[in-house]
Image 1 (cartoon, one colour):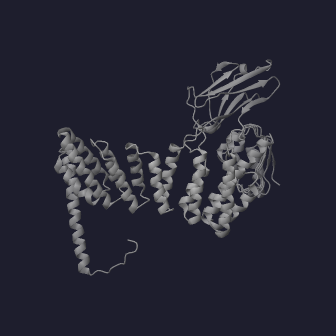
Image 2 (cartoon, rainbow, N blue to C red):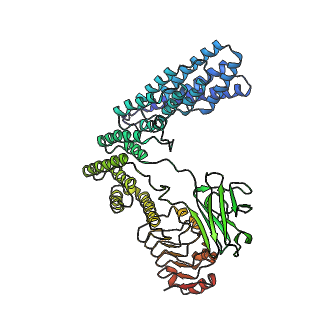
Image 3 (cartoon, rainbow, N blue to C red):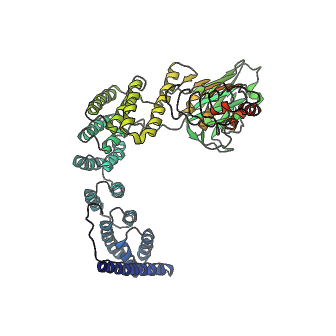
Length: 565
């Protein structure tokens, strides 16, 4: 054990201890064998209960014996009177307390106690709350006890206000009590629910909590508990899955739908229903990769009757069973495509609209954190919080400053540099999409940003030109299949080694992969399924210097003009 001196023993003492352990083991095995034999024989009596006492009293983690014990109690309940059952339960509760003193973090013991109290005729919930308080006083982070306390408080109909006061006392005694902060996060949405997002607390409650947690991390800046809670306060409710885009293409007679989160569409179901010119249309939905697993994008082929070029217009309406409002778009005569799409700015996908009060408080918090960072320049929690506060206030206005703080944070926390690179990449992609939306463009330039991952690709279904040159991408995700309109893709100066797994992009005409790490022509075999690809640039890749590369590529991609220089 930590903090205990190692005491040397003589050979005689070691031998005596060994004999004692062997004796205990024999007794343990004998008792366990006897229990299982009685269980097999259906002898669920008090003698069997006493045998389990011997084992569980020494080892409360024997889950199977807790199951045996429940079987015995249920059997005795059928045979005994209510008074006998009450006495049995009192004894059982006392035994459980002794087991918890042996191991306060025993899953089986806490679970058995919760089960038992569901069968006690008159449970004493006040005592159970007091019992939890005692165990939390000795170990305030005992999450088994916290879970049990939430169970008891629910059964006892303990007011959430009382539970919140309970956490106040524990936090005031020790700001590092992460479990108390977590308990508050469970209570606040019940006490002060946000009318728009019931899983989140209302703004007034959030503002009060931000002041409380600020006192905590200024008291001990290196403790992570308060910083984690602060991050939860800055967060937002998870957005519900939504149908965000419907796109119709006359050229390949198809319709694509994009969702904010991966969803499944069961064959022959009404998960997705398509109406063409107000009449239901029987179609088969598929994912771009053909696997038909839950995904962001689903496609269907349109019959010729739905795209009659002589008609002045065709309307298409998609109903999704998991959403409220349908999406509808109109394809006019002479047009190659049409769409209906939600805007990330209107729907506040990447950030929430702030009230004056919250904006003022967050601005004050930002200044306070910057002041603290001046005193604790390498405090990673403070640096990350500054980044998140800037993100919440105005991601575009603070972008340059945010990138500087990311560099400082990576230097202070090098072990998490890969995670920070991915988080930085996510923020930069979101900013790029916001700029594109504000400009009402279909061209996205993310070049030279040092990106290590691509995300939010479901928002790019309508993009025609994507520039990802000068980044640190090592692979292209299959989610690129969402880019149904992409015509030009620039990927120069990355770290890409293969295109295996890259889905077909139906409109892609030009692809540039200069200065990557492509070694063999076979690394590009995925491009053979790109129907419109006409130009491919591969200069300064390892395969460019191979004499046979041009011939292999010409065989692999006969219709494509390839530049190896």
